[in-house]
Length: 171
Image (cartoon, rainbow, N blue to C red; front, side, top):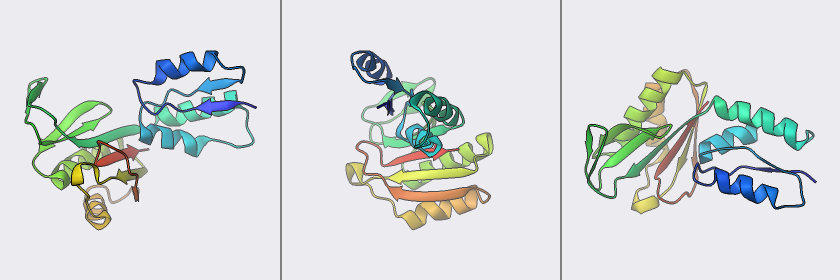
């Protein structure tokens, strides 16, 4: 039977493609570069469809996705002309640094506001984690999203991902 493979990490896509060529099974790699992108792809999956048709639909879903993550800086650095200090929260959208700050919720609000006003998503999904001992309450996140993106459908789920207290998908 066919296999659709979602690497969900930009650093793993090429390895997944190479591994797919080594299998006797028909493996189609959908180049998802983040967990939120992989989730968008899964929404497009049709259990009755073949791997190639599914891969096409899943890649189309990924192209409409914008992924964001909020994490903690592990060292002092400069990203472009922005100074980032160790232990500061940083917010990235599609891999680009868009926010820094001392407060997880403050950086979350900046990221959500930028996602909403720049891309007008219909759905925003947030995956939480207690990575680094930081565990925001769902009600706090939902309150921020209600203020920043009132027309979007929002969902908050415990994701359990390491390293990133918050992963965000906007579709």
